[in-house]
Image (tube, rainbow, N blue to C red):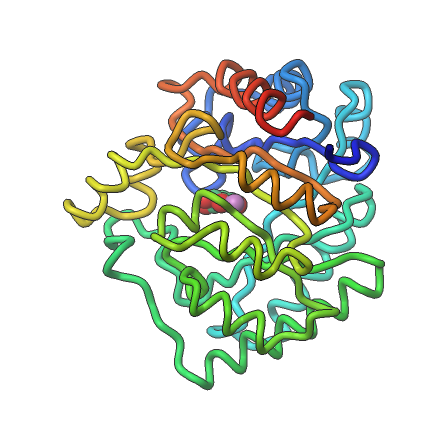
Length: 298
Ligand SMILES: O=C1C[C@@H](O)[C@H](O)[C@@H](O)C1=O
Ligand SMILES: [Co+2]
């Protein structure tokens, strides 16, 4: 059994309003998003593009609905811009999340990323870093990890399709070359299966460094089409490559078992971006909540 005092269930706003493509869900309001997240039975959320950025204002909206902020995405540019530029933005982000009571900071390197490019094929167009770029990334992440620790927070690195850290080999190299007391891992089931990695092996290998979990499922027939037709990450999202746990091909039972057996503590966040005009976010949020109740017993 998961310890309900130490494991929290959340849902990302990206199913209502998409940060990567703001036209997806532009008709959905911030208040609709958080009200429906709470009604569907979740305890928290990450931060979307329509959320107020003043901590007291945001708390006012969330507390009445029984919601908390779990974390929020941060794009680093450690491989393509001077370190100081990333640090300046990171400190603002850290202090905002700290004021919101979050304990982890999601970081993803966006230097050389093709994640936001509408026409670059996600399976062929990915950049592979050289040794110098690896050094910039790992030393920079250690520094960000130290800044997070000043506030008793943790950097959780988000491996991601189309970015410089996507594959098992890249995750391994990142974990080996960063300080295990400063840089932790975010486990995103959807991105690993999409990329063709063994998600359970990665979960088991890094279970003690995994401090944040994104529960994302994929529709394999769409991913197959994305490969064959050389489509981009964003076009794939529009086609419905991602969905909520229980609606795609990933078996979450062994994932929940490994987390539970190893006494995972932290957030489990449903994160399933798709076109809200096609996949009603409230309906899918309820579906995910029910699947987690049945499969994980929480
Ligand atoms: O955590 C995430 C944040 C999104 O902006 C991203 O593109 C998505 O796929 C994801 O996993
Ligand atoms: Co994610």
